[in-house]
Amino acid sequence: MIKTDTIIIGAGPIGLFAVHQLGIKGLKAVVIDNLDRAGGQCIELYPDKPIYDIPAVPECTGEELTKKLLEQIKPFNADFFLNERVDEVKQDKKNWIVKTNNNNEFYAPNIIIAGGVGSFEPRKLAVKEAEKFEGKSIFYSVRDKQKFKNKNISIFGGGDSALDWALELSKFSKINLIHRRDKFRGAPHTLSEIKKLEKNGKISIKTSCQLESIDGDEIIKSINVKYEDGKIENIKTDFVLSFFGLIMKLGPIAEWGLNMNKKTIEVNSKNFETSKKGIFAVGDICNYPGKLKLILSGFHEVALASVECFKRARPDEKYRFEFTTSSKTIQDRLGKK
Image 1 (tube, rainbow, N blue to C red):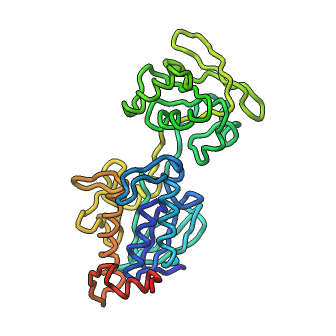
Image 2 (cartoon, rainbow, N blue to C red):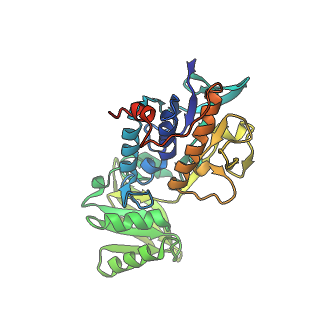
Image 3 (cartoon, rainbow, N blue to C red):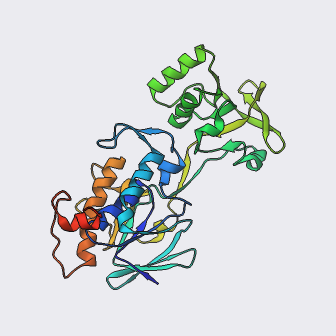
């Protein structure tokens, strides 16, 4: 059994910042995530997509933000358990025991759930032959946009992800933007830019049609789309990118006896504690009056949650707030001379 001060469930930006906020208070943490690397949705869904709402950072990508956060928490030596899912949570007096699918067992007075919207997986293409091309010619997220350079790309979807990637990849590839309806749901400004590129012949927009079949053996050679009037069109394609959204799954969290509101967890906004003492929820998975689903908000939430974590982990010590700029103790923990 691994004993620590706080068990963090979720290695996205909010979970990573939780390590920092706990660390400057002298608390140790372990981080558990069912993905194979840190970063959460930032890495899985938009590693190359710009983020504009991080204070003092005019622009960064999901991957850049993750790298900076990992660099920031290096001094605290948190242990990461990736590719691992929390299966069981049970109480032992004032502490919690967490068991995972890899038979690891953790013991701590605090649990911080920073699991975004729970575990997630993309809504996949419906045609039966799609599965054999997944990870080769069919992708549901973009991890390295250079992979798609100078190619024929068919992008399916009508929301922001589909439009954003059509715009980005059109800089160096031929794009077919395909949607089952004739209206898109994405940002008007992005759609306006897409329309301009269509006029210039850089993007071909095909609406009121759906994927009918795929031609190819090991890799895709072309796809066939079917229009509402029954017409079939063959489109030369090297890669298919599909952005039909995500299927959100809370998984075992829904069975932990927390106060749930649809797929979110109700918390006390004073310290972001749930209905169970010592279990906190931060980021997109928590809900309270005035909640905004922003990374910025999650940073604030975890800062307050970490104070209550300190009080529970160090009940015999008085919590004293200190500024990082003037506290020698905090600077020592950060490795600053």
